[in-house]
Image 1 (cartoon, rainbow, N blue to C red):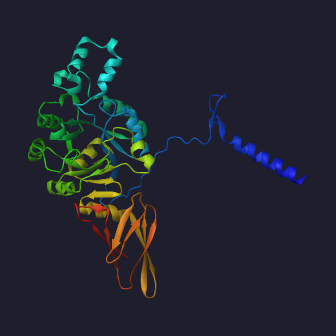
Image 2 (tube, one colour):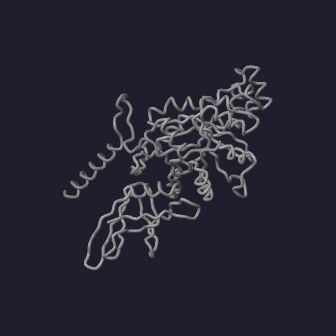
Length: 394
């Protein structure tokens, strides 16, 4: 009898367990929904409020959609940015390189005008011979992104990419009309964007090269003061020498995905946080973000590496940690707590390096008479081979 009672109790628990796997749809009485299904959840990335009063905004300033050579629609890029914890996104589709257009025109051939067919057949729309040959609206990708961005609290920076392969690639940000940018001369293309008040970023400066030497086009653009920032990180590429270049020329530093596929595939499924540019601005509006980039108030963050201005790096680290003191008769024990989503590699003078994981605490012993903890932050760079040193009083 006792065994029979236990059997029925277990059986009842089994039915409850099965019942909890589903719930009634709110509208359709004939539909159940899987209770274990996890909806779209944003990954929150907690960063410190730096002492100078600026807010830090997480941005990707280099992305592509199906309107050029990416695989996703603009609205997906916006949703993807929100899921990955970003605040700011720039859609920067190629002006000259739009390979998907041929597939579009073949699919819609019966509906295409003779003028457009002729342009496609002569490669004008795909290679953009001149402004009169661009029959599509190169602002459409931005328009589509802006339509949905408000629903996610994402600020979309209008932009495009000027792509000239061996001569260099450049993102033009805060543009007003992408249709007026193209010129056969890449330097003139950048000048055309500058007339619109654009901020210009030098993309992946070492891609497909053996070094970081500037091409003829790049030298002209730097000499004329037309470059405002440079990518030190592009996807998984890292160019430490660029840290010195941006410091010497007072440019903003950037880390971006240059995403063409999906950040879920390229980063999140592998447990990796996508690279991002940290912008220190008054608020998340286009004027404030533009002012911050022009003032070079940025840090690059990717693969647990942070690069930028030395003082800003120090402020960023100090604002994100707290120190607690435990006094003992012959020594002092310090508890250093990381209150952010950033992982740090720290080294006390004369000691081994220690990893300070996000939202964790490490114990550090110091002499009884010491009043300052001196740490070198090894995964922060203000030069290609130099790390900031912070001093925490206790």
